[in-house]
Image 1: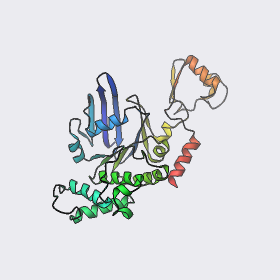
Image 2: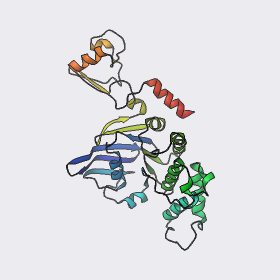
Image 3: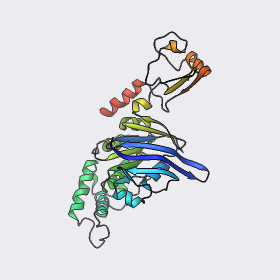
Image 4: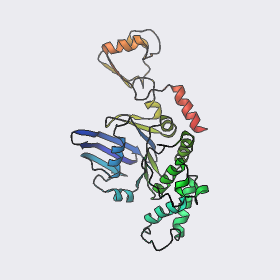
Length: 305
């Protein structure tokens, strides 16, 4: 399997507080992978470790098979990693095209030639225009970034990251602060990005996550609690059951109710009789997000429209 990004037993502590706890994560090349979890779960800390903004206490970060654990942010960018932030960092007085052209110029090593107009380098301008077209921003190319709707500004920040030609793009809550009317357009543009860019997404909006992601990792208390497809994460059965000393996997196996003293062919683990029987003789671990399959299908169908 080809992985764009891996972490191995990654740990970050601040004094006695463990912010990231033995995280081993794998993101396949070309994937649309989401990292979710409650506030304070350690998601942004993990992104800071991946990008080199923070140094891990223990563990490793591997980018395209190369250990980059002790490389600085600039070197990771050169190796194909880029990120966006929860709060955008745009030059409000520059036009959209000027902003993205500056980013392309920086990658090409032309960023320090301040004595020439920002649009003087035809190659950079053409590349910037192509990025804007891919993100459906070409119609606002000559408008100032500060005058645009917030959803458009978030797309501009993504364009700035893509100007570095990353192989791995880390999106830290791209829909934060974006009105619902604009968030769909935002994610449609992100979903349309070419597959040579692997995307790791942090997002609180579960509807957007389940429309977008092919794999989901759940971070709770700094540790990875679950990992799998959206169908697996949203399954309405327990991930694991311990019953009378036997370990069962209802998310994978259809156990009849008679297994737990009932008589039906299908077990509903939420019924009081079954839940109490299991509780008296063991325990259940539920997925972090419970979602009926019909709701999941509705989300998928909405995304495909």
